[in-house]
Image 1 (cartoon, rainbow, N blue to C red):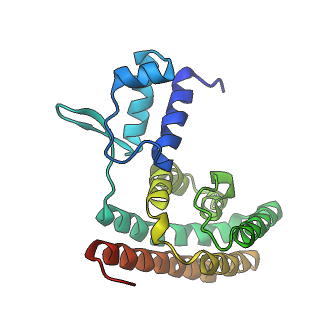
Image 2 (tube, rainbow, N blue to C red):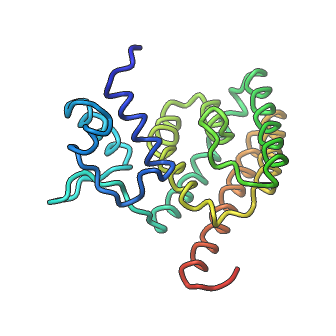
Amino acid sequence: MEITRSDKIYKHLLEAIVSGTIAPGSRLRETDLAQDLDCGRGPLREALQRLESRKLVKKVPHVGAQVVSFDIAELIEIYQLRESLEALACELAAQHMTQDDMEHLQSLLQRHRQFLTEHDGEAYIDQDADLDFHFQIIQCSRNSWLIQLLCDELYHRVRMYRFQTAQYRSRPSKALQEHQHILDALVNRDGELASMLMKRHISAARRALESRLTSALTGEKV
C-alpha cells in the first residue's frame, strides 16, 4: 500500500502527541503546522481528522484543533475496560497462538528483561508496538473486533498516558514477572488461567497508578 503525504503527517503528529513532544492541551494551528511540516492544508486536515477519530485531538469551538488533556478519570476507565477485554484476548490467544507466536513472545520478554537490567529497572514505556507484550497477545487472539477496539481505538491513547504517567510508575520488574506467568499459562494452552492472570495484572497496575496519582495531587507521600 502506497504511503501518502497525509499518512506521513499523521504518523509524525501521532508520535509527537503520544510522546509528549506536543504537550497535552496544545493548540494545533493549521498555518503553523503546514509551515513547520512543509505541507499543504489538505493532507494536514486529513491527518488531523484521523487523530481526532483516535481521540487524541479534539475540536474546540473558537479554538480549533487541540491535543486532548490529561484526564485521570478517563485513564482509570480505560484500564477498567482493558481488564475485561485483554482477559478475553488471553482466552482466545491460548486457543489460536502458534509456536512462532509463543517463541516471539518469549523473545520479547527476554529483551524486556535485558532492558531492565541495562537500565537499572527503568520502565520500558518507549517500546514500539512490535515490542509490546499486551499488543502482541491481542493480535494473537485473532479476533478482529478485539484488535480494532484495543489496538486501533485505545492503543495510542494508552501509550500517551503511559508516557504522561511514567514518573508515577514503580513496578516494572514486578510487571515483567507477571508477564512471564501469563506467557507460561498461554504456552500451556490454559486460557482460563492466562485470562485470570491478565485481569489481575492490569487491575494491580491500575490500583498502583491510581494511588500514586491521587497522592501526587493531594501532596501525600506513598
